[in-house]
Image 1 (tube, helix red, strand yellow):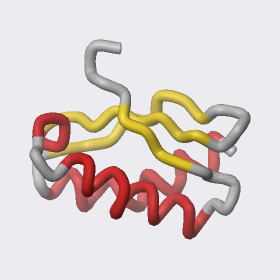
Image 2 (image 1 turned 30 degrees about the vertical axis):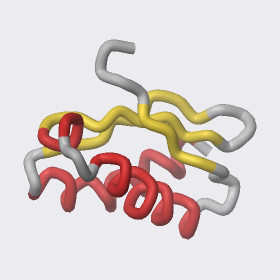
Image 3 (image 1 turned 90 degrees about the vertical axis):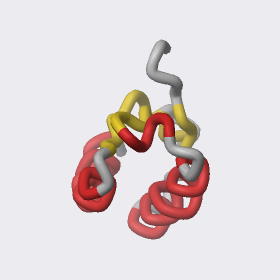
Length: 77
């Protein structure tokens, strides 16, 4: 499933990069939790949680039914 998530993130990444941010895949757990790190402008943006849930999570769930949730991992983890 990790490979599917990587491919889906490649489709999402240009929109984040256009705003000065990016997303890094940290982990995909066996129970369908995708852990990502928002970077650049996305890391400190007040809308980061909305981007994570309504943008990244929704797109991943639409394309990969096994994804149950997307969680953000802080830069220092």
